[in-house]
Amino acid sequence: MRILFVAMSESIHTARWISQLSETGWDLHLFPSIDYGATHPDLHNITIYHSFFPNNKQKKSGVHIKGFPVIFKTLASIGRIAFKKFFPNYRKNQLKKIIRKIKPDVIHSLEFQSAGYLVLEIKKELKNEFPPWIATNWGSDIYHFSRFKEHNERIKDILSLCDYYQCECNRDIELAKNMGLTGKILPVIPNAGGFDLEQVSKFRMRTLTSSRKIIILKGYQGWSGRALVGLRALELCADYLKGFTIVLYSADLEVKIATEIFTDSTKIPVIIMPTSSHEDILKMFGQARIYIGLGISDAISTSLLEAIVMGAFPIQSNTSCADEWIVDGKSGFIVPPEDPDIIASAIRKAITDDNLVDAAAQINEKTARKNLDFFVIRQKVIELYTKLVTDKS
Image (cartoon, rainbow, N blue to C red; front, side):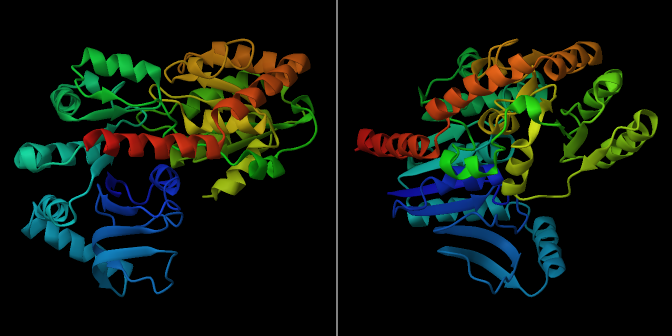
């Protein structure tokens, strides 16, 4: 089977999804939807089509990179800028040529606003020459962006022209239907795949969740994240946090500055994790009593799934699909992303009620075994593609 993915080649989500197929022996290809010249280190057994890229002499397992290799990263960047200026349609034309040359059994775009829009343009041009198309939406692709005029029509076009639609939230299926989805709906599967539960259990503290003294706050602010609201909620709980350490990850500059002010006013220790491996993130989750993830738009939120797997009590914003994974007040709390008072109340309850967080950890462990096992999900993904090609023939 030959599959052409159009996706962000530097993304961990792209790498984790494709890794589920890397041992199948299938002919896998990846066309980066954003031309950064970067390749995620977890990609294996795949052909990747960059434009200009820095020539890394350390060969990765089964990774074949096509494009223009140059010695320095800066030189690769200059090459991409020049090509974009003088040949603005270069990447689109390159993808079109690749489709005609390799004749994939299926094209799978991962994410809408870069990959989906790019594939949409070529689908309209190639028409009957175009192979079956799976369109997968990530996070906020429909839930948030469909509210904006400049995105709404293109999203509708994707949904009316794709042959198959795949997502990680039942919520998004209903949204897609309401926006004119005509293609076949594929099984709901987490965009980041599953977890090797035996492997990640090594990173999880063997003691009860109630004995843990770390609170993790996802550090995203920007257009969607609301880490600053989370910090304010923690500040409102300062009198409950004696003996606890707050850990922030993926924190941007604005959040880092606010964290210094928070520490100065509350005297509560805060650790800001540097850019870390997935293993390091999981280790921290495995030591946390509480995980807080806030944003005005998301799908599942991979961090929520990491909390479920690692035994941290999740407090997640109600703008995600958290209600499809946890029961509010029982296996976690689902909160409005911009109300620090309600979030603070949830934090206080999770700090003071040992029975709640310990019982939640047991419930979430069962959820993980049932719905997040890497090997089970991988088999579902393989069957998804196999059935699709069988139906085509």
